[in-house]
View 1: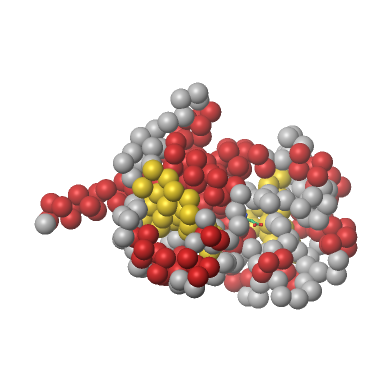
View 2: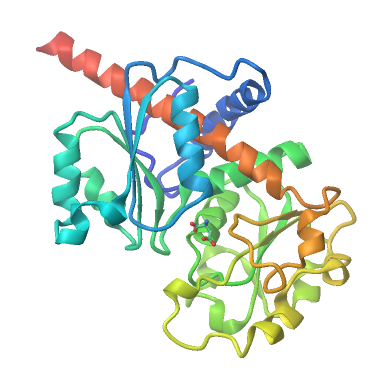
Amino acid sequence: MSFDHAHLLGIEPLAPHDITTILDLADQYADLGRSSAKHGTALAGLTQINMFFENSTRTQASFELAGKRLGADVMSMAMQASSIKKGETLIDTAMTLNAMHPDLLVVRHPHSGAVDLLAQKVNCAVLNAGDGRHEHPTQALLDALTIRRAKGRLHRLSIAICGDIAHSRVARSNIILLGKMENRIRLIGPPTLMPAGIAEFGVEVFDDMKKGLEGVDVVMMLRLQRERMDGGFIPSEREYYHRYGLDAEKLAHAAPDAIVMHPGPMNRGVEIDGELADDLRRSVIQQQVEMGVAVRMAAMDLLARGLRARRNTKAVMA
Ligand code: ASP
């Protein structure tokens, strides 16, 4: 099993075989998560620090659980209460934590590129838990694992990503990953929520849900990222739901066995009908949460193997 990356900063630098390596290991960890003895030792003796400068429920909880299940010492910093409030810069905070010799640093930050910058300053493995509207690699990987398990493959599928594409790091990471694995990607949403130059990504763009969903295997819904909007991008939530909210009627245009996904947090009645989100015959939203833990275990395990190997080489050379 080879994974030749010091950090997990995005999907962009990964090759298809890296993606498959992470997903294969995550499949094993998903089985472990379903057993009554959930513990592994891959991260025993290592220290994992979680720094979330933006709110998070699922991602932070699952990184914490993933580290604990693999035996790491896990510390989650309450960044709202930290010295950041007193004006300390991101880099100062990172350097302070670096002096405590963490092995894995999990970082979420509102600014695109902040996590890459931080990775250049510390000497441990850094995992991007979402930076601005740039990337959210573990989300795309957990989505990929959920799709692979539900559909039995991760290539030549027709996948619709719907809603606020422009402000979504989830959409961006998924477009890159699903494209690398040779799927057909359709983006559906109002033109105001489509990023400029999106056609260069080799995707098809629709502003009509029924046309866009025609025959697709996977429907991925996105939240309106209001915290990243600086103006009126939609007329009203009611109008938005009417045109772009996923309900049974619109879903009927997709393939009969199409699955419904959402990264959470979900706004029922805005981008998705609440009953459809809970319909276990179509919705795999709970599986996404489950796969989140498994994928984060796999990603941290692979990065830790590389970290240990590099440290051993250094020790031999010294
Ligand atoms: N939880 C995802 C993210 O952090 C999606 C969202 O917030 O809508 O990007």
